[in-house]
Amino acid sequence: MVTAPDQRQLLSIVVPCYNEEESFPALRAALTSVAAELEKEVLRVELVFVDDGSRDGTWGQIAAFAAADARVHGVSLARNFGHQAALTCGYDLACGDAVVCLDADLQDPPELIAVLVKKWREGYDVVYAVREHRQGESAFKRWTAACFYRLLRRLGATYVRADCGDFRLMNRASVDALGRLHEYHRFIRGLVGWVGFRTAEVRYQRRPRRAGVTKYPLPKMVRLALDAVVSFSSAPLRLTYWLAGGLMVVVLGYLTYVLINHFIFGGPLLPGWSSLILVITLFGAVNLFCLGLMGEYIGRIYEQVKNRPLYLVRQQLTGGDVATVKTTAHADSPASSSE
Image 1 (cartoon, rainbow, N blue to C red):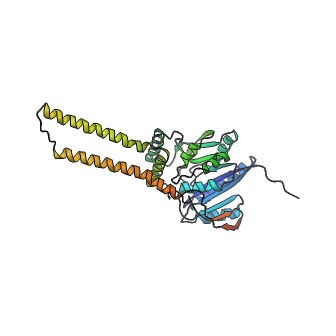
Image 2: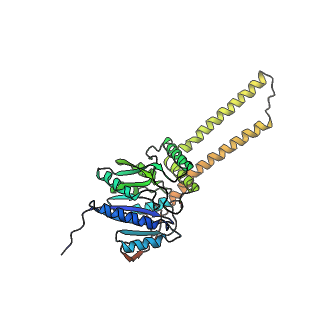
């Protein structure tokens, strides 16, 4: 007797992991419960875990989960390629009619996935989870995050949603569109906004980390912010014109002061050495700043044209059968910076 194929829609849940051994048991329990509830809503569920070169027991726990649950697919990257690259790998491997991504630290509540699915079924292509409150985070981090999103929008990236992380649902059409974008330095939050499609928002309270430490300390947050600004706006390059114009006004103003002081008030024509050193230092600093700014853009062009893969896969596990471990290399997407 031939069994009819399952015609239910497939929902993929993508979870990038990096040194999440402590939080993984709670994550496994939460996702198992959420998947069971979603499957009652005439859905099929697959869980895609991407281990981004973890140095603890994260991959071992993913493998054990895959051996016990046929819905689980595990991918181990060859090294730590960075959160954005791991997330891209998950999107590339997800087969669902819709794809939800969330972090492994359980700050984004898995139970909210059902609400995102409801919005998707109402006809929306992309459903953003918007943070109303960020529990467990310092006032400094909340303030810098708010300033970053406002700055990015003022620089012209108006399609970047404020207070949205990587917790979202995308339908198959929008995921395929995202897969056509091959930036080397990726800021996926901006790329998702750029592709457009019909969007909706779901607001929620972000919780503190369940265990472990953040994988985005201040230096990496600054690097991600720089990737976002340079990738989505050329306004920093135009800043050089404003600096040049401002300095010209200052120099002309100082020249006018010297001439008036000499011809009207009889002051000395030659200025002091301190003023001369100040002007030379100011112009030198601005020149170096402009060169560094242009170098940042040129360096990204250099990285992009090398066309290296975004990530390399070391092992891949199919749920329910650990004998299907494969070693592969993904070479369709260009690369990104490491965690």
